[in-house]
Length: 374
Image 1 (cartoon, rainbow, N blue to C red):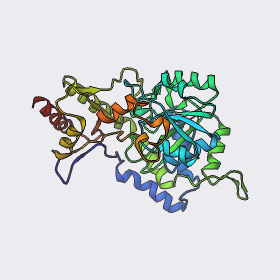
Image 2 (tube, one colour; image 1 turned 180 degrees about the vertical axis):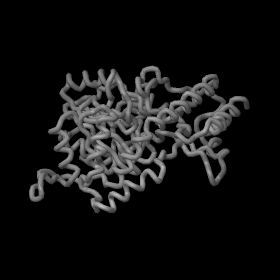
Image 3 (tube, rainbow, N blue to C red; image 1 turned 45 degrees about the vertical axis):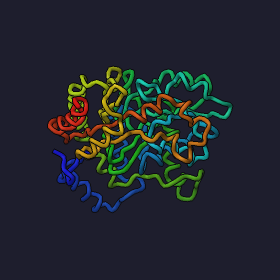
Image 4 (tube, rainbow, N blue to C red; image 1 turned 90 degrees about the vertical axis):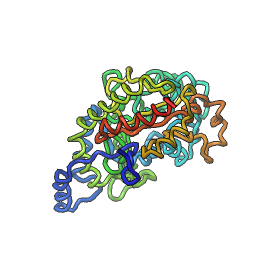
């Protein structure tokens, strides 16, 4: 079981066998193409479109730059409605574009942006909505789109957690105006570091591809103040190797998720988010909610897990709205965000990754049930 030298982290990256990756490296050494849309970059874009069931993907160096570029591509200004319950990069991308975040509370059952709270936050300065598919659970995409259409707003989904997730018979990544994926090392599908933007049409993809390459159209023409957001050939090569094993990795995650649910179902005071409304989950996270009926509060359990070598995480704590650059906003108060505030005080994400054994899951569960038994 865990030791100080080998703890159970909340996640560990799944990597292909090294001997399967070496031929990709040899090809990079042979052709001397390292970046700027090389052959592996092009192959990965095509392979991801096919795997995810979307039409247009632009690869990026990371998801934060992809978010920043997406906002620029759609010429978003003024105010954007978003969630406080996410990784801080969601809101940081707005500040980088000079946009004011307007925080709206989450639904307590899904922890996604609550559509019922969106319209009251719309002002004459609102130009877009940026929801997050939290833990890979799809937002209420139909209601959000209905609100956006009625108020003529753009919708950009932070889909960092939603690789491979389907909703309503199609990829959830095809909803809204743009969706942004993360391929960070902690994600279900990773390219060491990386990200992508899913576009609805070729013209939008072209603009995004220009913006991620400094705004260049050709060798002598720059049409916008773009950025260097290109994915390297090394990252793209790893992505191609990773895709070969992604189905098996997700299946292993599914089995671990099911085992956790079975072992924790009878633990009083431990809440588990349901999966019933997800057609194709990726099992990227296993969050539990430590409720008042549990013998100790979330932070006490968190410390116990850490002391036992289980490096669980309080995703997402603090709320984005609690950080210094946001807490002065009128929308950032706990009174405006009661459900998000409760979630930030109750959620722990437990270890889940393909190489996690069921014996290790039993150990994690034992730390939780020991507290219940007193």
